[in-house]
Each structure stands twice: as structure tokens, then as C-alpha cells.
Image (cartoon, rainbow, N blue to C red; front, side):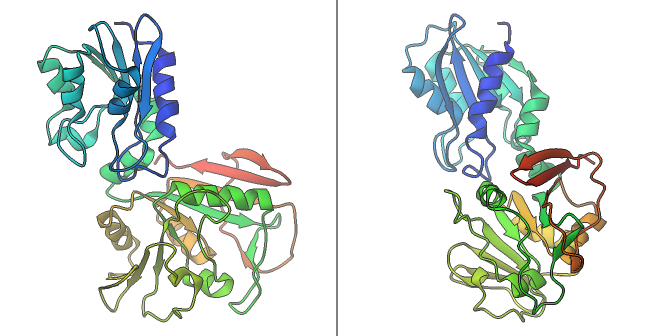
Length: 342
């Protein structure tokens, strides 16, 4: 059993199709190979649905002879959850060779899937292309290892570094182009929740939906320390769950969930979100909100859209060093992407 990169790469390609649909589960892809040919493949498509191994075995139509090799990007589960253990299905199928990219950290205390397969005589290789598999599932691993959501800071700024007009009563400053707007809506569909600051809500009255992209609306999260935001704002509508972090009350009212916490302590805020099983958080500034995360180095990615236009004055965008950023053109805008692996 000699692992081949092309088959694990295919697993990762398949797994990525689950982005935005499987949280709080990880994204997983699986292929089954016989005589150097893929005979079945699948991925975890939706939370609560069949796992990647199940879909791949069904796609291969069974009738395994024992010399097939299963490639899977994450260790098969060995416990009962919303679905039965994948280890049981693998053993029943007759597949005797399994190559795993990386461990499932949730299984450390539940019984290791690889150990179960080995105990039953299956040939298992674990750790093949582990780095690439972990990178794909950064949201899952950050959530479980750091006990907080995976955090993406996003904003759009002008060429001279402004993020908005000055003053809450000022009109909204449109910075990015239509292509960038669509991209942002795609990003929203990929994450569990989206956060905006109170000033942004009052100035722009955003909807924070995915109306320009086919996909689910993320849950909305915002901090309203004294519950002073008017409830006729768009973010209070029922197009998505709404979590209002405050220092007054804990109460559930339909799709609105008020949660009392220490709003001045960002770690307390993130602890609440972790408890809500929010695995990833897209933070769409205001500068004040964005700087709270930057000052604590609490982020995993920055995505900064820069337009070629100058406005001369207004609200300054956060000041960050873009020298190490990956730059991607979006029409006449540029996207600066920075990963934080600290």
C-alpha cells in the first residue's frame, strides 16, 4: 500500500465542497481506489447527513474484494453521533486498506478510529498529507484547540486608507466594486456567523445576508452593551439567527437570543460564541470593532479590499502592514489576504 498524492489531493478537493454546509463538523473527502483507478468517491455534504466514507462506499456500489484502498482526509469517526460510526461501515464493507491524512482531535477521548480499524486487521497509514488536510480544516481545529471561533477580519478601504465617512449621521461610503460585493456575499455563506460594530449598524444599516450569492445567511452577532440599538434595524429581521451580546439580560425571543456577558472583554465574547458552537466568525468592521481584535492579535485571517479611489477624509481604516499580503485583483479593486498563524 503506497500512498499517492493525487488521490489524497482529490479527497481535499471533495472535502472543500462542504465549506459552509457541514459546521460544526469538519470538511471531509474520501476516495476508494482499485488497480490505480478511483472506483468511488464522496464528501460530507451537509451537517447531519452521511459522512464522506458512507458516500464514497455507496458511490462505489460495494462488492469489495479487499485489495481496495480508501483515502480519507480525516480520521473516520468511531462513535455514534447524528450518524453511526464510519469505522463500522468500513469494516462491514470489506475494505482492508485505509490511508488517513490527519487525526480527528474530537476522538482523543471517544476512542480512536484508526486504532479501531487496526485492531480489526485493517492496514492503516495515518499522517499522509497531514499539513494540507489541517490547513483545509483550520476552522475546525482552531475551534477545538483554541476554544474560540476561527476569526476572519474583513474590511474595504479607499486608496488613501479610509473606511467610511465621518459621523454616525453621515451617508454610507461605498468603497468596493460590484464584483467585490458578490465575493463578500460568498464569504458570508461560508462562515457560521458575522459580526459588525454598533456604529456600522447605525450608519449603514446593513442586512449582513448572502443575497448576492446562493447560500445560507450566517448568524448575526453584535455587541449592544446597554441594549440601546433600535430593533427596526435590518439586522434584527428573521432572515438569520441573531445573537445580541449585552450586559443586561439573557433571554430567547424567537430568532433573537440575548446573552449577558462582559462585553468589554473580547475573550469573554469569544467564549460565548464557542459555547454556541460558532466555529467561524467573519468580522466586518467598523474600525473600532476591527481594532479590538487586532490589538489582542485575535484573528486568523485578514481580507482587505482596496479600491483605487481617494476621498481625502473620513474614518480611517485599521493600520496594518500589507507587505506580507497575498494580492488578488478583483476588477479595479485589490484583495490583500494575510494569514495569522501565531
